[in-house]
Amino acid sequence: MKSIARVLILMLCVAIAACDSQQAATPAATPPQTSQSPAPLGDDALLEDLERRTFQYFWDTANSDNGLVPDRYPSPSFSSIAAVGFGLTAYVIGAERGYITREQARDRTLVTLRFFANAKQGAQSTGVSGHQGFFYHFIDMKDGHRYRDTELSTVDTALLLGGMLTSQSYFDRAGEEEIVALVETIYGRVDWRWAQARAPLIAHGWKPEVGHLKYDWDGYSEAMLVYVLALASPTHSVAPDAWSAWTKTYPRSWGEWYGQQHLGFGPLFAHQYSHVWIDFRGIRDEYMRTKGFDYFENSRRAALAQQAYAIANPMGWKDYSAEIWGLTASDGPADTILDYKGQQRRFWTYAARGAPSPPSYDDGTLAPTAAAGSLPFAPEIVLPTLQAMHRRYGAAIYGQYGFIDSFNPSFQFDVPVQHGRRIGAQGWVNGDYLGIDQGPIVAMIENHRSELVWKLLRKNAHIRRGLRRAGFTGGWLAEVPTTATAPVKR
Image 1 (spheres, helix red, strand yellow):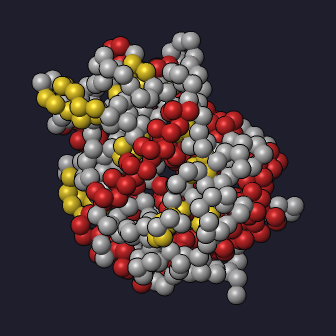
Image 2 (tube, rainbow, N blue to C red; image 1 turned 180 degrees about the vertical axis):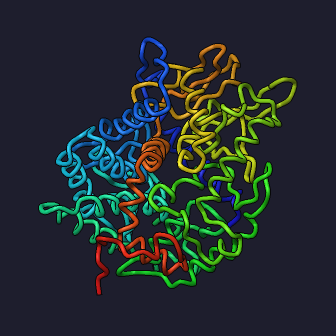
């Protein structure tokens, strides 16, 4: 499947879900704001403040009875299973940072894992949370059942498992054995071979109404984690030819954009999600060995290309510069076409925005997570951007849970907006935080500061096995870990 088609599906799926959420929201739902602009902070202080606030999103908004994390807040919302994966990762970070105790993190993790271990599975269209070990993209916050006609999602299940494997590697003390066992049960139940509707590639998902979706994971994307976990499965692993078949589709993603030659994907989330859990520094598969650098460097180049695009600003959007940049999948102001500086420009609500590599969707909407999630790759350009956003837009975009999802300085039109609010000279500002955008912020800040998540997953036997079966060699993968969680089941 071509990247453009994949992004269009993402836009349609989440736009419908966001619309449902917005219709359920109270009028003009806005994130809690401080009465004054936040005080200026040094780099270290800003990262600490942002990390703690973003962690708090997951801790405060999750359903404490089942661990489910809302897709968005404060608009009433269903749960995103990917957001749950980021939440499980955040609890580990919170325990290490002292935001919560280890016991609190353990208890919330157990509640979450017990829910997913016991959640009903089956081929019926309602009353279940998943099928064949996979889970539905969106599920009800209370009972965890499939939300409307959402799809059984291979990538969102992988993101959920990323958080679970983080928990498994962290909770390794006496009395915490149940966590390790529950993760083994949930992960081992996922039938990756069943998801190979057109083997050896892995399908995007499945719906009881139509069967497997007609598209597979091909072309460079966030699906690295999907394939690594499918290769690593102790029960239903796919053959190594799945990885080679996938990377054979890379050439259409390869190119040079704004001086950076790399595997391109417009929205930056694709360059971040798998890297939240896997440390790709110094390890390479066969494809990257032919290019002479690793996937970490590839993501660094993607961030540099986006900054260069913002500096060039070919569409003339307000405020784009070396310090104000960042495009990824995010909310936007409205689905409409308006005159902007004498040209007809299309604007979107939820869209997989990205540039300069295709697919490119840019309507002037910026997402702080695009920059913050790239912090480990290119801190020299990300830190000034976080500082500039914090300083320039203040409390308009920085509140109780850190940066809101998105804002658009160029959108200064007197028209109705479907999300957020218009605030005069500062344009449009979102009314929600999104869990899948909060996740990379807290996790990648911590990876930049301490490498915590990377260190944990470097010792996880599942991750190591999946990478090796994909053909990765070198770096930390060649080292023998001092301890290795999740021994292979024979």
